[in-house]
Image (tube, rainbow, N blue to C red):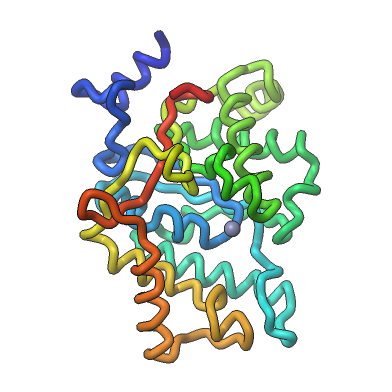
Length: 272
Ligand SMILES: [Zn+2]
């Protein structure tokens, strides 16, 4: 019954379980997105985030790692790469309408999230959820093949976030957060899982009107692409920029004549 009440408050007008909530139509809600690296949020959801930002939603991006490993440039150092990735993420978010003060870095090293203390990690993310009390959590789908077989950070971030969503609603998990920090339990009403396989997706956001913004936001991650990933340069040669945007546009998911981003929307903890 609590599920039903929460959804009625969040998604009125009969948009309940039979029909997934219209994510991109939300206004003035709090959206908390968890991403393992500073670019997954862009590649999965930049169009949806641009629409949500336009509608006055309060979007916070929580990034598990500082992404300090992914460069082939022999001159690159981890410290420098982390700083580059931070600036690129800020540039990307600015294009989408998300200010840099809404980006939160947990600062784990790239590829090392799986070796963090699991109890500390879930406690840390539980605290973030209880602090921001989001109407929607966006996070990687723990069940998709892409997550299971991709980088360790993706598996760990996906599973950790959903464990924290569960813990956040029960006051007996990490009770010191309530006793010492005054943080009450919080039941996340809706999750929007990204990096879903097409068979798991149950909701698609048409992003045609913000596709250019998405491509520009993706291209802001200069060091993630050739040629910068091999020999770092902070900017694009115009012809490389045109070709990467064309490549990304070609990879975009299409459905019913629209460019879309796919999600698996679920309500509360593990319910469909
Ligand atoms: Zn990633």
